[in-house]
Length: 277
Image 1 (cartoon, one colour):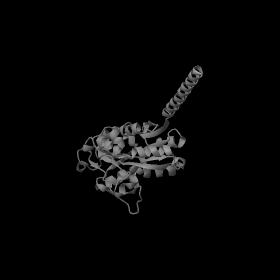
Image 2 (image 1 turned 60 degrees about the horizontal axis):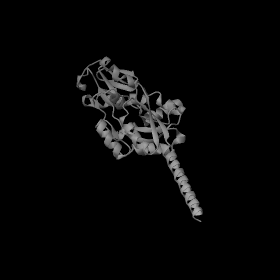
Image 3 (image 1 turned 90 degrees about the horizontal axis):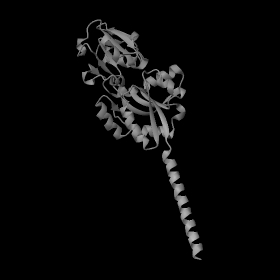
Image 4 (image 1 turned 180 degrees about the horizontal axis):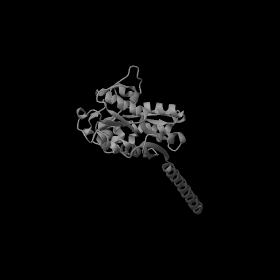
């Protein structure tokens, strides 16, 4: 009888061991699962997204940041499936790109409003601009228009009656100083500052080039009219309701992100997902 009891006890211990081992294996397998999301960005100053990536890692999501050097390729990469999401553009830029490329990439969340600014290595204030001086601006349709609006706001140019939302240099009616408007790829603007008298530069490009916003000649004011310039996280239309991508948006749109953004960039980037105008 004692021998039978010992045998039963040994069997029970072995069974319990197998159950515990199975549970341990299951937990290990679950914890090792990770979904990778490739996010396309422009520039190399990705400290904010790296901060968000740390939060996502705790949710089993590995955010892989893919850097691009210009505004022309991240949407193509997304459309081709080389990245899953991108975050570098505002709604006007996306609408214009979709129209030109017959695509339907779609915003799935707001990030920041990033004001453009005017920089120079030759003057310290806008009143020092002289007749015939050269001002460079981005050559993509939407940021070109935005830069021209900033020059208009400062009283240098006016537009012809009937000019639409995306003015070009051909829409200029008056140019009191006869400024020469030079169109360049946005990424080239900081590196060619010494070749012009002033340049209107996107915030992200300026930050990546380590330009000092305290020395900017002017910074775009953020008002209700800034809504089309709100930066966005973009996905393919079929992925609008993707649960993992929604988690990426949610991880970005937090008070923690706001606090870290302020620490990194001060007032040069403004959280836009709940901004009140």
